[in-house]
Amino acid sequence: MIAPKQPKPAAFLDRDGVLNLDIGYAHRPDQISWVVGAKAAVQLLNQRGYWVFVVTNQAGIARGLYDQKAVNDLHLWMASEMRQAGAVIDDFRFAAFHPDFDDGRFSAQSDWRKPGPGMILDLQAHWPVIQDGSFLIGDRDSDVAAAKAADLPGFLFDGDDLLATIKNILRQLDSASVAVESPDNRHK
Ligand SMILES: [Mg+2]
Image (cartoon, rainbow, N blue to C red; front, side, top):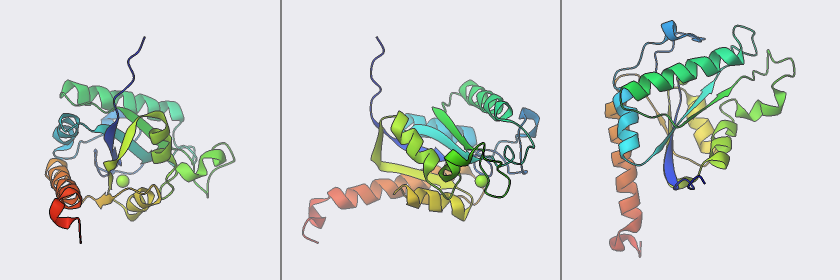
């Protein structure tokens, strides 16, 4: 018997430009340069009791630049690199669809492409995610829009230091929940 997984809030991370430098259509390990603080940031999220999910637009598939297997293989490699650093990515979703290039193969998942919320909603359907405290971080407006469409706070990353940025976000979310729970705010 497998014990049911305990519900936790989730950190939804964009991939390119958040975990690794965005060189455009990376699909092999030798194209991945980790962003400063990326592995430590994921480790911190693990320690703070978050599911860590990656949600990434991969229109390179619809464009025929690489296939789904290449993306799955790359994600296995990224997860293993993380694990060697003591960090766990719990799951990945990628959106192969692109409205201008898709030949119909991926149109059923058109809302998976950010700014659509599909990848986030699918992860929430497969994992016990607590909405309160959950958030998304990305480097584009479309990331933040996807978060908004899934009714989650979305944060823009400036590409500098992911650990420092995540610490900041967790502080903000903590103080927001304290403000809601504080008796002083009950009558406001
Ligand atoms: Mg990005």
